[in-house]
Length: 281
Ligand code: GLN
Image 1 (cartoon, rainbow, N blue to C red):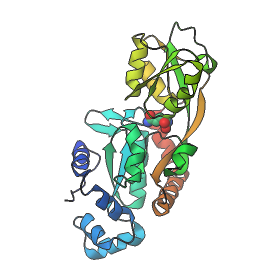
Image 2: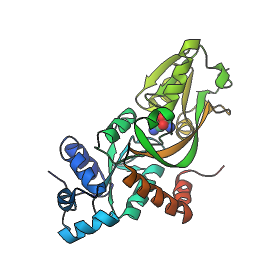
Image 3: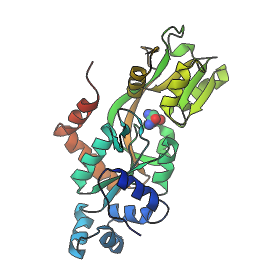
Image 4: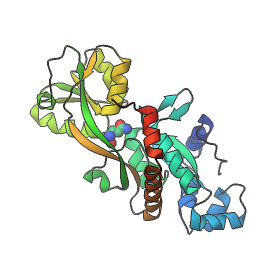
């Protein structure tokens, strides 16, 4: 039932999807819980009982399953058959700090929180904005990035800022904060078009099907650099912060993640990772 975990490769992704309905929740429980000794021994895959016991106090061994949506450059995106990006490297560094092996589950953005709630994944990293509503369902780590929702329009658009979105057609990615906040404007006559991928919204804008796209600033920059004739409005629609989400009440894992984040912040790793993907302006 349990699969040998490969590093961040397609093989690991395929293994993840193959085990998603069966053993995944057991495996992940074993990876983070102090109490499931039998499962841990099995999940350790090749370690001895003694090594597995050690993992109960030091979190060595076992795998850490990250749920993400790899459509969000530069935080997570496909590079050939690999999934790369800032969140992926942060997750790898955290797994390294915890002595665990990272496994990535690439799923729809609006499935990430349900996946954490059901215990199929241990942590969600997907440029996830901290919101009070999400805090009802998951717990968030310390924040690791400042972000904002930006507005993309055609270069010749007359729309000049967030106050002008009432009554126009706005594209968003389904289930994102862009979706949530633009949906508040529906009462003012705004039409919201929801896409599965942010890039699809930007393509629709480029084709003249919609008037604007509201999306996080960094992917906005990436997409606008890939499609001609678009610009990002200067004024942000909202200011937000990204954090790592875990199942509500999993303080054991959350404390470990926060400790790892602190180490990675203090030793410069976080800055190095960000600098690899985002060039300072
Ligand atoms: N930051 C946004 C949110 O949390 C979008 C994240 C994403 O599309 N990956 O809703």
